[in-house]
Image 1: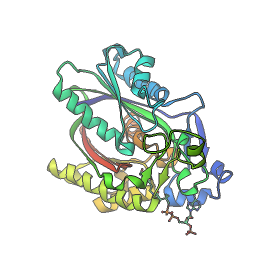
Image 2: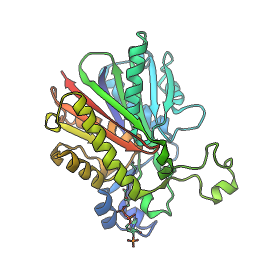
Image 3: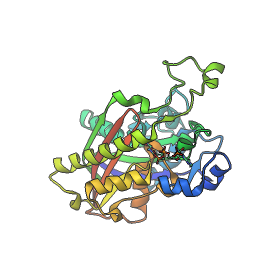
Image 4: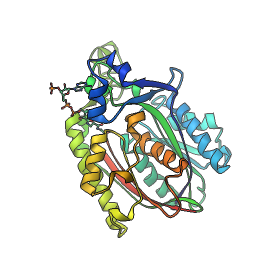
Length: 327
Ligand code: UT7
């Protein structure tokens, strides 16, 4: 299958590290040194996840000249849907006017885009009637953040991206995608409230601060490096390739030090890595397709080149994919 077009959208409002200095006991210097983040975007109060998807999707569809009515399937990867029911994908379908499509959400935290690629690949293989697929990854992470937890609140931002996918034609061809999960470590990156496990949303659940993201930073840091480097290597080996055969690596953007450690394990020169962490922070499942869209649009990714994606996130989930740009 091939990614024929991409689009992305970042909300206008910028939350700089200096703004966070006024909210919690932190500093621009600490945040930048420990994470590589300078600023992140925040959705406007009336913007929900499907609105971010809509802007990104229109850019992808316009690039390719595909009409919303030509879409057969819409998959949105998110852990911050507009509502628990309906899915963000259904809200998006309506806003786009993609009446023929079937739409659903997929939750795999920061690895969402990789899980989305695997899902779309399976749909295309299973059903010849499906021709045009829109895969969107979008998050409004800033609404899950505990702005009293200085180790975690500095990390997250909002944004969305879209990929228009079909069986063949010019674009980024998928050579392989692999995904993994390990439920035993679910507590390490947890949004406890709002689901069936805790009390219903109530004064009590709010007082107990259950509706914000809890992160075991140090633990997930170590596992992230191991998993992202390991699965990236697996995908390359399965294709009979080495790191030297790859032109670009787009890692999940959680922390610049994680990315540098992955590069070190893989023996990858940093010049081959695509970074957006400094300006956008961690946008969970949206970080990889946003970086992919930017690297395509600014001409970094050229025909004939190979692009390796690798991600890690809550669940735990992880995955990697190898793409090849063909004229
Ligand atoms: O999407 C993938 C999921 N995983 C992640 O995104 C998280 C990966 N982990 C991380 O990015 C890092 O572990 C963090 C950025 C979350 C934390 O960085 P760290 O280097 O692991 O710091 P730490 O938690 O070990 O804290 C070191 C010190 C502590 O002070 P003491 O105990 O040494 O006096 C913290 O209290 O830094 C302090 N600290 C801060 N200081 C200023 C923690 N957060 C801050 C802060 N500003 N924002």
